[in-house]
Amino acid sequence: MTTPQRTYGQRCGLALSLDLLGERWTLLVIRELTRGPKRFKDLMDALDGIGTNLLSSRLKTLEEAGIAQKVELPPPASTTAYSLTERGRGLQPILEDLALWGLGLMPPINERPDLTTRASWAAMTMLATMDRDPRPAPDGIYAFSVGDEDFWLEVKEGRSELRDGLPQVTPDAHLEIELEDFLMVSIGETTLDEVSNEVGGDRPRLATLLETFRIPVEAVQPAGT
Amino acid sequence: MTTPQRTYGQRCGLALSLDLLGERWTLLVIRELTRGPKRFKDLMDALDGIGTNLLSSRLKTLEEAGIAQKVELPPPASTTAYSLTERGRGLQPILEDLALWGLGLMPPINERPDLTTRASWAAMTMLATMDRDPRPAPDGIYAFSVGDEDFWLEVKEGRSELRDGLPQVTPDAHLEIELEDFLMVSIGETTLDEVSNEVGGDRPRLATLLETFRIPVEAVQPAGT
DNA sequence: CCGGATCCGTAACGATACTG
DNA sequence: CAGTATCGTTACGGATCCGG
Image (tube, rainbow over all chains, first blue to last red; front, side):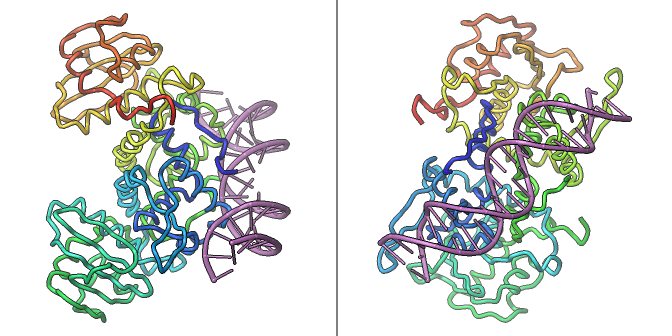
C-alpha cells in the first residue's frame, strides 16, 4: 500500500511528523534528495537494501505529502526524477542536526569496514558543520571528484549548498582525490599536502575552505561503544 | 529482543541516528522524558497503544545507548523511573524542530476529534516557539493546571524549561484552566480574559508570557490539507 | 536498461495474558 | 506497578516479473 495505516493518533507536531517521516528509509530518501534531483535508480543505488516496492511506496507518500515531486530532467537525460519541494527542503536543517548528533555513534574509520561509505555523506556532515560555524567560509564554487562520486559546493554570502554531479559553470577549484584520503582530510586527520590528489584552480582558497568544511573529529567515538 | 537487527549499515551520522532512534515510538518516549522523570506506567499512559513489551524494549535500548537511565524517585514516591541523560537532552532541540515542522500537518482543533490531545504536548510546542523567538520572555516560574495535567515552566535569563508536576517552590503565577480553553489560548485564538480560568499570583506577567509562549497559528493548516 | 508492480518469507509491532 | 511471554497482524526485504 502507498500509505501505512499505523498512526500515533496524537495531536502533537512531533507525532504528526513521525506519522509521515518516521517509517524506515523515509528520511534517508530525503537525505539523498537534498543534493539534487535523483532518478529511481540513483536512489536504489544509494540506499542499499531498500527494495523497489518500498522505495516506490516512500516516494508516493512523499509526493502526496508535498515533500517531493516528480520532475522531468532536461535533455539529454530526459528521464523522470524526484526532487524536494520547498517544504521538503525545510527538513534539511533537521536532518543535519540529527546527522551531527549521530556523529557520537560513529565508529572509527578502520573499524566496521562493513559499513557502506560514501563521500557525499561525509560532505553533508562537513556542510552541516560549516553552516553552524561562526567563521565564514570563502565564497566560491568548489567541485569534488572523490572516487567515482562527483559533487560540488557553492558558498555565497554565508549560505552554502551541496549538489551531486558537476557544476554547470567552471568551478573556482576542483579537487580529485580517493575516497579514503577524502575521509581522512574530512576529519582533519591529514591535509591535502600529505595525500595524493589533484587540484585545479584556486588551491589556497580550497585549502581555506577545507579548514572550516570539516567534520568535528572530537564527536567521533574512540574505539569502545 | 532488546536491539533489533535491522541496520542501515551506512557510515553516515543520520543513518546511525536512525539506527538507534528511528524505530516506532522511540522519539515519542524521549519526548515524554524531556519533561522530567517518568515511571513505566506514566509512559504507558502518555503513549496510547504502545504495548508493554515494546516500551520495555525501547527503554532498554535507550538505556544501553546512554540516552536514558533508570533513577530512583525520592520518597515518598520511591519507585524507579526513567530520565534523560545529558546526551539524551541533546536531542531536545531536534525534537522541537521536528515538532514545529509538523505543525504544518496539524488539522484544526475541531476536526479530527479522534486525535489524543494533551496540554503538555501543546506546551512543548509553545516552549519551542518561545525559544526561537528573539523577543525575551519574562523570567519566572509559571505553573499550569490544565484539566488533569500539571506542568510548570521556568524562564531564567533567556533559557526556559518545561517540567511535569508541580514546582517545588511557590510559582510566580499559577493558571488553572480547561484543556479546550488552554488550546485556544495557545494558538492565540482567544485570551485569558475571554475564557473561564483562575489565576493566582502575578497575572500581568503571566499574560505577557502567554504572548510569546504561543503556537504560531499560521503554521496550523486550514481545513483541507 | 530503467521504473516500477507482484509475490512471499521474515522481522517488527500490537494486544492480551500472565508473573514477581 | 513493572515488567516478561505469547501470539496474531503488519511492515519490511529480496526476488521475480513486466511494460516502456
